[in-house]
Length: 250
Image (cartoon, rainbow, N blue to C red; front, side):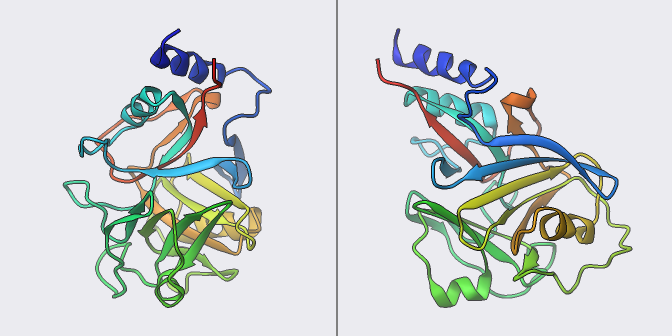
């Protein structure tokens, strides 16, 4: 069997119950809203960011990320859009892929959700992942193998973002990520119902018990979770985060 065929067969095998190879994705409800949650164990899973192909073309979709990995003899386990981007799909803030910074850190307040400070950075290092508030990130300068900046922060050291209003009528499908204090666990969430920032932040703080959480985007939020039969499509995306599963050797 050639490499692409092996990778395709391996990807299909992810749908077999009990293999436990991909992120643990499940449906849960919190305060009357439905969500899909995907847990990533950083001790055993290979979590990466994706933006462009080796030829420099913006990937923009889960299918193109999957096809690229298949060419490498691997498979995409789970994926989600991972931060805001300009119309040309260039990241709005810091973006690091495989240790190479492709866009710089933005520290000032600005318009839109990204500029609703404090915002933050999702930083992936060997064996851990952390959501770090932007000014703290600037001061500590951690060496991230992959990183994406977005905003606003949803939860900061166990507290909700100070600008969130419990009765806000700004309701969208939203997605984001929260991390445990020791960096061993990253939980990605996407709402299946329209929710406001306050509700979405409480999901991470009160339901999941995570001290740090970061908003990725709203309205265009998308998820790839093959065990749930889900691979969202739509307009091309910017940064994408996902787990990579290596196919077994012959």
